[in-house]
Length: 246
Image (cartoon, rainbow, N blue to C red):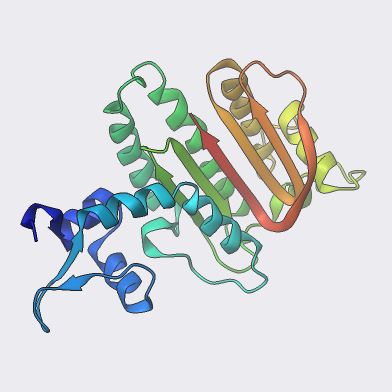
């Protein structure tokens, strides 16, 4: 066997963008198996298996976030994707910006992508503060090779937020429309709505797309679109779920 086809767990973790501990957990759960060169040796991987796994994991993070945000029972997500407070989120999004700067073709776009994701994540923390229904913090993951970013929370959601100032709202769809189109107030905790106007401005101006879900409502938006496309979603989200592609 060609030794160049075999890589260490450290190399595999770097290629997949996860920690070595995560790979060990995946191995133990049978999600992604390693090989041993002897019964008690270190874990190794076939390079071809890694490349195949990368191809198959397109949108995998989105499904993970969706399942986490829609599950009736709350549990902390995997540590690699869990920002339990705003400080952790800031550190990780700052790191993502550095990585975005290195992606060819994003020289004039990386700061817009980063600030758009940052606005969505910060809104989760600004709105929920100490009022998280079960699991505090957010799911934050990205795949820069596949060019997408995922954020999710199990917070109170947009409808519950805006009902405090707009008690006439009847549905998640109405609240979602209002959040993306109308300035409510600059005072907490309604900052979420105003931040989403900034997100909408970026998405419609630049070559980005957005899928945003809250409750049973789903919004899709892309560059150049004026009207909001909102429909009912298949799974109800306990908070918010966002997918940014670029």
